[in-house]
Length: 81
Image 1 (cartoon, rainbow, N blue to C red):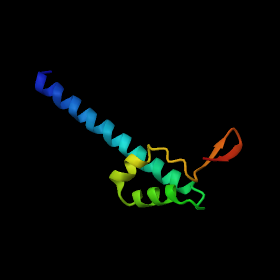
Image 2: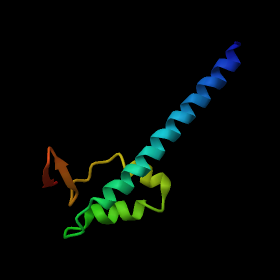
Image 3: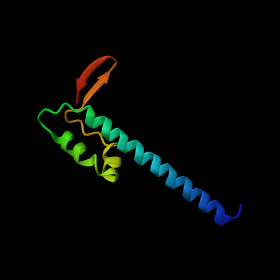
Image 4: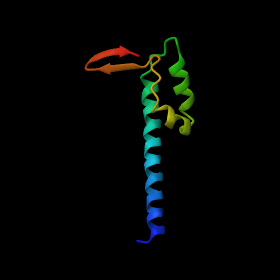
């Protein structure tokens, strides 16, 4: 392989990895939105709800832990963060 071909392959792999990470973040945002408690305060619900139709924003928000009203299940015990 020539140097230019290697750079092209590496670029394609980087774009592919970024796309997979973005898609996973968007799906995590949908999952976390569904797990919200929808009780006051509504910070997590509003941020995640706005990010749902905006895939680029949702891809980033999915990786962020907001902690306001998200229901978390740890070892069979349900807690709220």
